[in-house]
Length: 85
Image 1 (cartoon, helix red, strand yellow):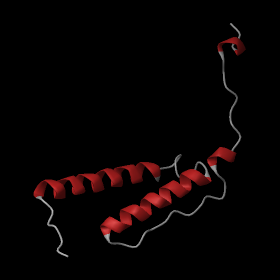
Image 2: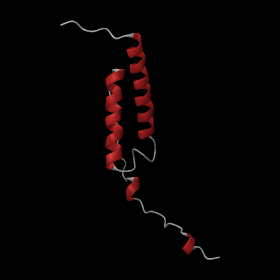
Image 3: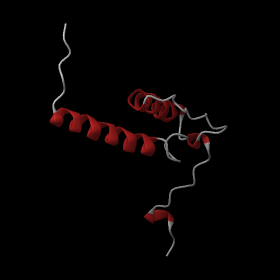
Image 4: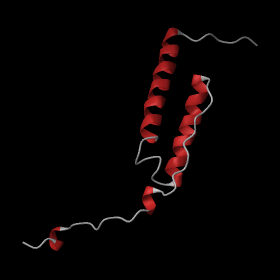
Protein backbone atom coordinates (compact mmCIF):
# COMPACT_ATOMS: atom_id res chain seq x y z
CA UNK A 1 0.00 0.00 0.00
CA UNK A 2 1.49 3.33 -1.01
CA UNK A 3 1.10 6.57 0.95
CA UNK A 4 -0.60 9.45 -0.79
CA UNK A 5 1.46 12.64 -0.77
CA UNK A 6 -0.31 15.71 0.49
CA UNK A 7 -0.80 18.62 -1.82
CA UNK A 8 0.55 22.07 -0.96
CA UNK A 9 -3.01 23.22 -0.23
CA UNK A 10 -3.59 20.31 2.17
CA UNK A 11 -0.34 21.10 3.99
CA UNK A 12 -1.35 24.74 4.38
CA UNK A 13 -4.75 23.66 5.73
CA UNK A 14 -3.03 21.41 8.30
CA UNK A 15 -0.76 24.26 9.40
CA UNK A 16 -3.75 26.59 9.79
CA UNK A 17 -5.64 23.93 11.77
CA UNK A 18 -2.69 23.50 14.14
CA UNK A 19 -2.44 27.28 14.59
CA UNK A 20 -6.16 27.40 15.42
CA UNK A 21 -5.80 24.52 17.89
CA UNK A 22 -2.89 26.32 19.55
CA UNK A 23 -4.93 29.54 19.93
CA UNK A 24 -7.94 27.65 21.31
CA UNK A 25 -5.68 25.77 23.73
CA UNK A 26 -4.19 29.04 25.00
CA UNK A 27 -7.68 30.40 25.58
CA UNK A 28 -8.87 27.24 27.30
CA UNK A 29 -5.79 27.22 29.56
CA UNK A 30 -6.22 30.85 30.62
CA UNK A 31 -7.19 31.96 34.11
CA UNK A 32 -10.95 31.74 34.52
CA UNK A 33 -11.32 28.87 32.08
CA UNK A 34 -9.10 25.95 33.09
CA UNK A 35 -9.50 26.69 36.79
CA UNK A 36 -13.27 27.23 36.69
CA UNK A 37 -14.31 23.62 37.29
CA UNK A 38 -13.08 20.05 36.73
CA UNK A 39 -14.74 19.78 33.31
CA UNK A 40 -13.04 22.90 31.96
CA UNK A 41 -9.75 21.73 33.49
CA UNK A 42 -10.11 18.34 31.77
CA UNK A 43 -10.90 20.03 28.47
CA UNK A 44 -7.75 22.17 28.78
CA UNK A 45 -5.60 19.11 29.45
CA UNK A 46 -7.24 17.26 26.56
CA UNK A 47 -6.41 20.13 24.23
CA UNK A 48 -2.84 20.18 25.55
CA UNK A 49 -2.62 16.47 24.72
CA UNK A 50 -4.03 16.96 21.20
CA UNK A 51 -1.58 19.78 20.51
CA UNK A 52 1.32 17.64 21.74
CA UNK A 53 0.53 15.06 19.06
CA UNK A 54 1.20 17.63 16.36
CA UNK A 55 4.16 19.29 18.05
CA UNK A 56 5.83 15.93 18.85
CA UNK A 57 6.43 16.91 22.45
CA UNK A 58 5.55 15.71 25.90
CA UNK A 59 2.32 17.29 27.13
CA UNK A 60 2.75 19.74 30.00
CA UNK A 61 -0.56 19.21 31.76
CA UNK A 62 -2.12 21.76 34.08
CA UNK A 63 -2.34 20.94 37.78
CA UNK A 64 -5.74 21.16 39.38
CA UNK A 65 -6.18 24.22 41.62
CA UNK A 66 -6.76 23.81 45.34
CA UNK A 67 -10.11 25.57 44.93
CA UNK A 68 -12.19 25.74 41.75
CA UNK A 69 -13.54 29.18 40.83
CA UNK A 70 -17.05 27.76 40.65
CA UNK A 71 -16.80 26.87 44.36
CA UNK A 72 -15.97 30.42 45.47
CA UNK A 73 -18.76 32.54 46.94
CA UNK A 74 -20.52 34.58 44.28
CA UNK A 75 -21.33 38.25 44.83
CA UNK A 76 -24.99 39.14 44.94
CA UNK A 77 -26.43 40.31 41.66
CA UNK A 78 -27.56 43.90 41.53
CA UNK A 79 -30.93 44.44 39.94
CA UNK A 80 -32.76 47.65 39.17
CA UNK A 81 -35.31 46.89 41.90
CA UNK A 82 -32.59 46.48 44.58
CA UNK A 83 -31.10 49.93 43.91
CA UNK A 84 -32.79 52.62 45.96
CA UNK A 85 -33.01 56.01 44.32
